[in-house]
Image 1 (cartoon, rainbow, N blue to C red):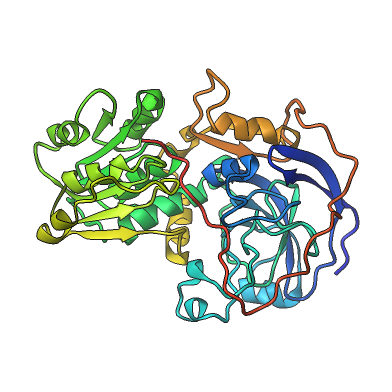
Image 2 (image 1 turned 90 degrees about the vertical axis):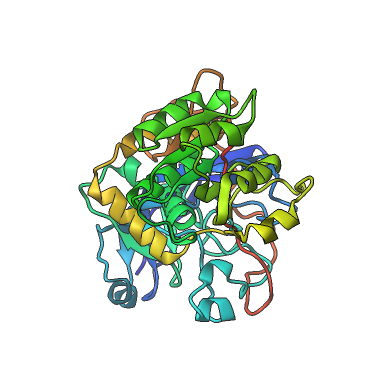
Length: 411
């Protein structure tokens, strides 16, 4: 199936260097599809890609098209792909970031978020080098290629596309605050961090019947803490100027938490707070990366004597994405309030800087790229294409990570 025309795409060549380019639409084989992107969410991983903070760890190799939280409509689809995915042209879908190889042990046992079957390229949308055909591997574009191994979820046409673009954050909240800890009705849940994923954890905990649910954040997160209360949190704590565990316990009636989810990034002290807040036999879920910083005075004896379950989480599994879509389609929560800013493709740098907190007065929560929406260009369109020299395409079966979502939340 041959597609005529070109796609606009944001190409990152190096840290903070974005070009708006046009790339040819690829021919679509019987097992492939092409997505017309309606919106693409932005998270902390996009910030770290933009600044180059990820280049020495999980990649990617430049140039590449960012964007791993896309929602859109099927523009073209091969016959076998249509039968396999049960989709047709015009159907709206969200796309999971990970591209499982399907052959490694983790993929074969259903844990494809841990897939290591590709070579050293991070095989996730928004991370694959643009020099690997067909080039359109990211959601910061008006069209995106869908590999045969893509994992897709259909979304109702009635859903606001901006709300649909929160699917990745919501899936993370469901995975980390409900699925992994096994949260039950009546459980006391504490969320350390009030960014996108922290708010999603609040939603997920409340949907599981938890209560009380308390969230913490910085004073600069006051707008997010207030939104958390609208989304169902029973209490919110500003972390500065005092003992966080004491403040949290004051809001739970002195009852230690059954589940604590640490989605705060970069501050290892939140791990110690989590261990002090959780009850004996409770669960601590660690989801916020600390930038390689160790936890000072890690209380191993407390973990042992309190019988704690301390669980790290990486990315999101299929069931949580499915439940996130159902939560979005239920339309019984003010998800539209999570999306505070939208930008067109030429404004991609401004969108990332806004989410990063580098635009005073903007008070962002969730920022979304909506190709074709009105906006003032802030990226000078580049005259070059994506044909910079890159290494050869990936092959199986070498060990190596692919890109995963990473919380942008702050304590």
